[in-house]
Length: 118
Figure (tube, rainbow, N blue to C red):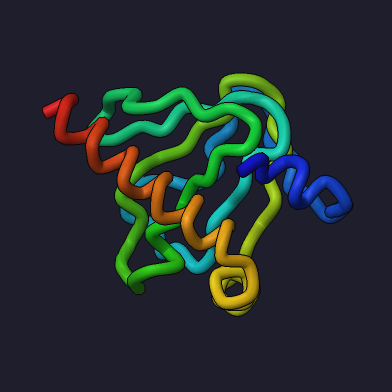
């Protein structure tokens, strides 16, 4: 599923300059983000575990639980992010089965990569 295409009509994007932090480990999270353009690093325990590109979902655990962020996301290049709040996330999961399946695949892929990394 190409999330950039799915949300291409969105105009209200959060712009983050290269080198800036989107969010940090330990912060309270109430949004997830879709990287619409640029590249960003996902960092866990000081190590880059993923180089996210356009279409990537970041901060997704905030939609599942009320715990703090488990990773830090830093823009490698100038980035644009679409912010997704919990109400919209729940709507997308209920009304767009392909989005729900894509979301689960992202989580499964990250779990497998973390297992390999460890």
